[in-house]
Length: 186
Image 1: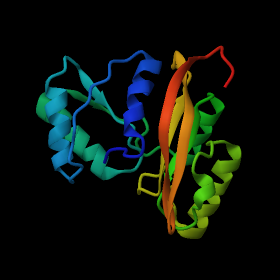
Image 2: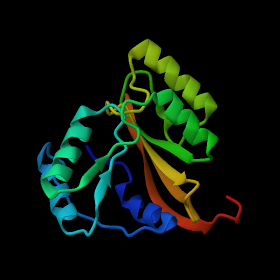
Image 3: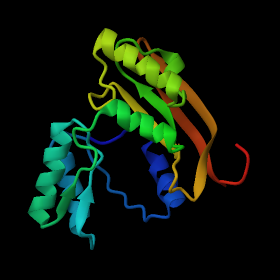
């Protein structure tokens, strides 16, 4: 349910977006992670939970059940939207997103660190047609990392990383990253 590769970089993402960063260790065990999420949210003074679920019924229903249990509003703005349109919109709006994990047939080591752009989107569509890869990665086919977004005050710059490739899957291990001002060159 939760993103794994480079999860520690959410600290930089929160700082770049000017948001508080709240951490709760989770076992990652199915359904236990939902209890962990509930425990964290119970401590917050919020009115709702926004989820980025597009097609994952597991994510949407579990987050919605936590919201219902705590009397919060559950907001799912991307639910059942066309993944191609979502990805095109992120590209158009200037999101800098890279692939940090690939775990499905058709992907290779070259995807690690690759930017989401028109070319990679075209290749994702090909992988979808050939192998059934979920275009939004919600089947666990791939993971991404947002390095910049229109609402970020700073950009995340990767200083050091290593591609870890194991037979036919892999991930980009970001060893060191820092925030830089948007006006600085990458």
